[in-house]
Figure 1 (cartoon, rainbow over the protein chains, first blue to last red):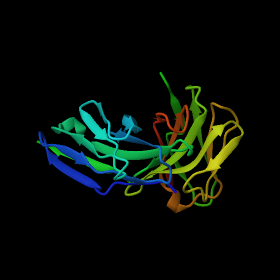
Figure 2: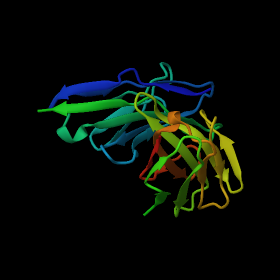
Figure 3: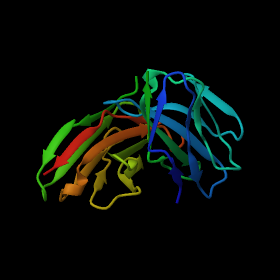
Length: 113
Length: 112
């Protein structure tokens, strides 16, 4: 079945440094829909950004990601980390033939002064 | 604004007892989901539904039942609660299976 892999369980950064959270996926379907959700402490997950277009950069709230079907990847990036970026980040996958959203294990991002 | 409301927000249950978690959405969404959140496992799909009176098994359905009596309501039932079911449970809804999912605030279930 469909699956999502986030290789880092925890990423720690000093404020101002660039952020990159890895996400790869597996699906037999050729048209995947990829999402990043963010969950701040004691809150619910909410959508950060999404994409279904190959090789097109999508941006929101300073974060960006590009879906690369050739490598089955959808890494999340930001040029400069802020303290307020500290949260749990989930990569998620859906397909037009699937009817559900499958999440990765999540990556905790901690940003320090 | 879209809203998914879960009740209760917190519950302590006894091993072997029955637990029902309720979810109500005012989004007019067809799709509803129950996810379980555990440290190290992320969000895992238990059951979902895309139409009233019908439910589908997710990735970890064992030990759980679901009920969708109307478009707005979706319940998760633990007939015989076990210690391993201690977790945070999120209900969510979406227009379709490929659109943004809106989450409730979660229910913290502790089985003792």
